[in-house]
Image (cartoon, rainbow, N blue to C red; front, side, top):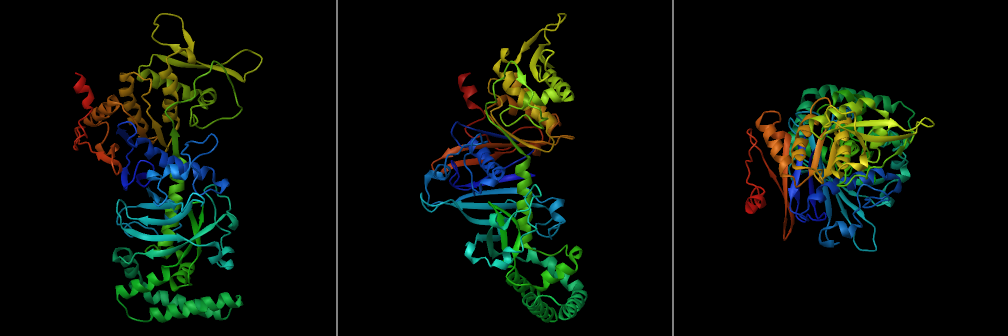
Length: 537
């Protein structure tokens, strides 16, 4: 789940700006203030991951891509290559990651499971490539760094570490060859007690059992035929761990020891995403005990595992992101069925006809909302001619002609607003658990219909769909409807995040304007709430 985005030195944003998201996020502001930059940052990450085969660290433009940002100098604030571009994404580490990492409730981030992962990029010169500067993980909404990783030169990675990455997988479950992996090393690790104390408490309660199992493991290793170099490393590690655990020490000593063990951990990265632990500087008693009793280690704090879990969560977030631009593909009079069953309308709405042609149930659901939105039409999707069922058309039946035979018209023959809005309506209905972003859905749409879209959004964020929306808009009517829904208790104030973006000399600024339980703004609207209307009146 996507909770927030922070941008620094990215396009219109110079100083760091935080954009908190809600199930419905509306982004307002004057033209060229930086509203689109917010959507573009997410689209950039998604586009790069979807084109991972290219090996590019950041992919600002592709053939028929979802965003075209030109080049790195075009993306960085003031086109200043002395700056470092940073994107921080706050997500939820879900249960799929919890079972594979030591991340637990009431441990790393209190009672919350939100974590922020930040990527920084730089390009030293026009001739140089774009480089990953660092990866960091942070508390929710906090500048406090939990751990920071910086890239390793390929020559610094011991060959034996390369042999340990056969288990790395991408989000599709496919193995990642070591040739496509780079590496980052932990260079900063927090010593804050709140992260380590649960582990220290767990240790003090179980120290006798831990030492006993480590001693048994040491005996087994001494009698094994394990390869000598590997065995010696483990023997030394186990012996040192047993010796350390035999002592009495306070929490500060414990933290120092564990910090020493955790620093310099090497992660494998694919593109900009961490995908797994490549090596630790040394084997430790914790890593040894992890292999003996993994299921018992619910209280272990492991920043390396946490950043990998955050990377997985971000990848799933990007996969659930469905961006739609301000203009969808113009409708045609006839379509040829492509022979596939699409699951969405396509980023430009080009898959909408096939989707409707293959799903009669979706057509009925769309008709229900066309009626509720009082658009005055219902859909008619049918094959053309007897020779081939691959040729079909999407037409609209005029429901306002009461008492008349069905009068249908071709989609290109109705107002442009209907054909532009229809893909967004259908995508909102067909999606489940997606983040649908769109620029200016109100383009070519009547003010009343702009307001009625608020009802669709309020319905689509609830069960069973549970979608989320990020909408760049200028529509006063849409926000007024959402305010009314909050006042009528059909939405909660926290369901709506209103972001106002303004342009300052130092770059764009993003402010969240909160709603109260009556749907009124708690925060003052910058420059007055749609003051232009009052001026004209």
